[in-house]
Image 1: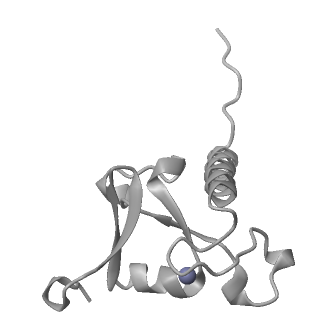
Image 2: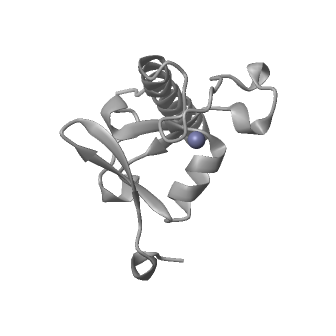
Length: 117
Ligand SMILES: [Zn+2]
């Protein structure tokens, strides 16, 4: 019995990576549209594509509310928020965190003693 030659691993890996990136981009676009292109934390007007940006701070970042290592799904529009680069920095440096309360997005200050550096 003959089996077809398997697809090279690097090719499969590249395809998977591309598909995941597309799925994340789709979720990002959906949330961006829902929030009218404004940073959900500070209200700054953002653009979705690098080519439209006047500065690096204009680009919409998708912050994943729940870490992937903790079961978060970055392709689920309910699990991402659109923020500007500055606000994303606050979230990623653990100074603030996002909480969902009754479907509303809250940006909560993390107490100093709970911050992990
Ligand atoms: Zn912002």
